[in-house]
Structure formats: structure tokens, C-alpha cells
Image (cartoon, rainbow, N blue to C red; front, side):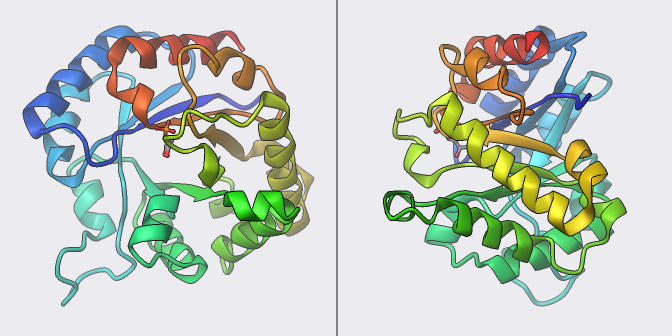
Length: 252
Ligand code: 13P
């Protein structure tokens, strides 16, 4: 039985003091939660959020990590800088990074390997665009993204990765994939992991859905057999809405 994982991707929102306040409210709401709860603020907010969540069951994730260990990479953050302050997870390959910041399948793979060797748990994002869905290449697209993201990663490490299926057309648009559509693609992703690492790895790996998941639709999405959690944007910025999603994960 896979433990569900609910992660909030705060994107470029909240100042450090606002982030600390939101983290404190989530810690209070999530005490004793029956699923994994992760919050992913901006880099500058990480130390304050780590402090607020310390000793609680809420873990902290970064929104990106560089693939080199150190050096002349202005503006970047290395894995050991994140683990040093108590960060546990890192989102890799979010579609906004692919779209606006030149992230490719190759850099997603490099970042995933760097995260794993640096002791971080990657949340690797994949998902098709509207054009890809409309032209019937959703399956090929997510299979390609998954296969390339996992290149050169052994089975023991692969099982630590969380995959977030985020259809690009559903992000921040209010258009959610139906629970059936989301479950179908999460199943395809699980099958891809099975072809790479075997059935047992496919059974172990956790696959989240992301894209306009909210307090109203979370329970249905999370009740599906291949959906092991959520990566939540907008609704993760409101402690009470996020809490409804956490509670839905516990019950489904
Ligand atoms: P929304 O929940 O705002 O659609 O964002 C989803 C997302 O991109 C999470 O990473």
C-alpha cells in the first residue's frame, strides 16, 4: 500500500514572513496526518519554513536544484545547500520551468540524478500540452519524459522518486483533468516504470496528480487507484483548502 503524498508548490508566491505564517498554519492543521505532507516555498523562504516545520510531520521541498555540486553557476542552488538546511524534497522539471526557463528532458535527468546523489527526494513533473493531448500523443509524451528523466538511475534510487503527472493545460487554468483521465495517464506512467524497473518498482513508486486540484475535486481524484497524491499550486496557498486536500488523501 503506497502512502499518499500531498505537496504544495507555492511557486513565486509569499514573502518569507508570509511563508512562515502559512507554514505554521499547515503544521497545526496537519498534526497527525495519515499521509506525507510537503510544502515547497521559494528558495529565500526555505530557512524560515524549515524552522516553522521542524519537529512536525510537514516536510519541506525546494522548487529546483542545479545539477553541479558547486562552481560558477550564478543564481543556482546545489543539492547539499538544500540538505544542509533541512530540505528533504525538490520539484524537478515543472512545466513552468520547461516553458519559461529552458528546462529539457536532459536537464531534468541531470537534476534528478544530482538530487538523488545529494540526498534529496525528487518530485519529477511530466505532462502533455493541450496540442499533444488533442493530437493523441499524451501517452508517447509522458512515456518519453519519464524514460528520459530516469536515464542512468538505478532501481533503488528510482523507487525514491515521486512522479507528478501535471497536464500543462490543467495548470492554473481551473480546468482539471477528469479523475478518469488523470488515473489513466498515471497508470501509463506506472506501466512505463514497470517496463524500466519491473512490477515491484511500479507498485512502489508514488505518482501524484497536479493541475487545478482543489478542496472540491481532491477526494474524487485521490480515490483513483493510480493516483497517490497531489501536487497543488493555487489551493496550497490557503491553509484551510490545503487541509481539506490532506484530509481527502487520508480518507482515500
Ligand atoms: P494549480 O494547482 O494552481 O493548477 O498548479 C498546479 C501545479 O502546477 C503544481 O505544481
